[in-house]
Image (cartoon, rainbow, N blue to C red; front, side, top):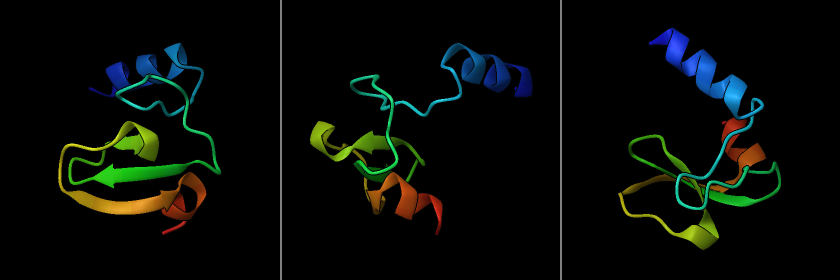
Amino acid sequence: MEAKLLKRHIEHNNQIRCVYCEENLLLGEPIYVDIAHTMTHQRCGHYLKLKDKGTLTSVALK
């Protein structure tokens, strides 16, 4: 499992991507984090119960 995660991060240049639009999440962008720990842009919406919301920076510092 760790090998898959490492390969995935290398392929995406160590950037976190939105699962819906597949664009990189930037530090100041508003995001949602759902109960599956999936991060998405707020503009892309969400489909599971929310766990947290805010900018990527504020969520990462919690």
